[in-house]
Length: 250
Ligand SMILES: [Ca+2]
Image (tube, rainbow, N blue to C red; front, side, top):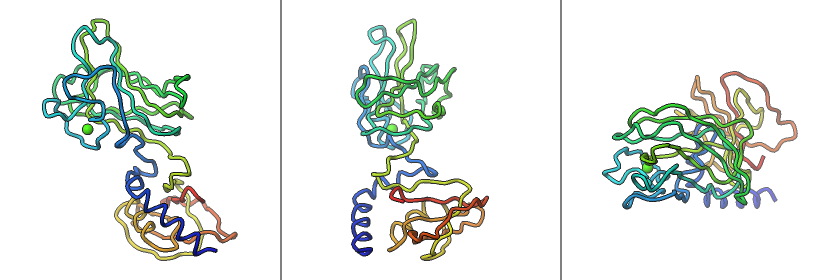
């Protein structure tokens, strides 16, 4: 029975391999490679250029999304479809290298699955430096399927250009990610203890190790404990320095 479960889980993890490695410190970039649209498009600078995972910052090299120019496109917006409802923690946008002053006072909202409810994630006040990231933390509990980024301008002269957008949030359990439990360590049967430079490397090792369903990672010592969980005696304990990463199934 257990072997069947392991095989089933392994097949599903393989199917989601490319998603798994989008993990960012326990969260995942929900926007990566996801479809995006925008209020208008200048030349061939489509909305998807901000979710392609590439961080070039030159519009002239087709590296950033770009809405239509001048007077005809007031209050431009950009929107990504996360493909499902997620809890969203942070949103980061990468500004262009030139004409960077256009990106300022950014309104970031989250829209429900049926597009009937729009809630504010956060408002970024002020300008963003050239070729720099701006990050906002959403109001607690923000969730939705679509993330919209919009700027408002009175002169109707600004355009919205985004070189990359990162939406960090928790994936639903049916997506088979590992979930971070900061400051926690799981007492469980050890499959193996290895050294890993980063939590994500530890996660990769767990993914590739038969019977590993979770892991503890110590960022001070780089210790990576690959765990076989399932024993009723397994307990999570508070242990500074350690972080426990559970598979969503557990
Ligand atoms: Ca990009």
